[in-house]
Length: 351
Image (cartoon, rainbow, N blue to C red; front, side, top):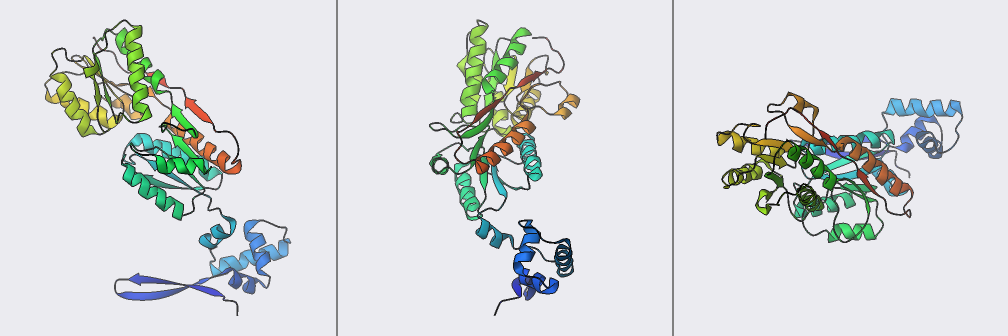
């Protein structure tokens, strides 16, 4: 005998209750049609006369029927869902990237599941397991610092994976990144042009591609302007305000303290500003600060902060398009896209 409802058990405190939910068989019975006809109307997979379509839609409304997404995904091998791993949802930079992803996916009828790894490879591994069990159709990932063999296996198996912002070393896959080398050079050209020579840079984990690229940009700019590089002005942290605060305290104690500090994200910028203020120094008169993250509300910030525009919303848009292309064309060649950064100058200061 064919079932005409599905039962879901729930709990409220110590009380258990049963909810009977309508199935496609209930809809077919109410409309007086076959389940094939109901499926054809709901999925728009075959022609159904206007009269029968109206009967099915009426039955769906009356029964408040919702298709079983799990059953459908098992049947079609598609959930129309994309997973995304970012370092920190609390960082507005990544939130804007995710917004670009979600807006683009929504237009194509896809949904987004988001997870924060906080740059811990163990959290990344846990999320990868969760995403696999949820049968997501594709993955966008800012890789955490550490072993990437699990992600590599997914790429080698031709899973729809797109690396965003950061590139794991040693293998190739679809990727969308900003030109970090050029971004740093743009900012240092600006600062050096104002007379600064001792320019510090606050970075994240050295094992990530973004960090090595920014160090390379710093070295190239110094060499091009004939300035002797001081390695002690390159400080590795963990992307956080606390690490930048501690690093800036150390920088300000150097015999030749830096006259400018370039922080690679907004949390590290705020840590640097706090240390400068507590040291009794003026900003930008004594120490100028700059940042690699740009937001419109920085126009209201004092002191004025010059920034690198990385076009993070556009990065999200392009990442979403790339993973959808990989889903639709699994055998196409890998694509690596780089977004051109731009300099935004705010305010002026003496060196």
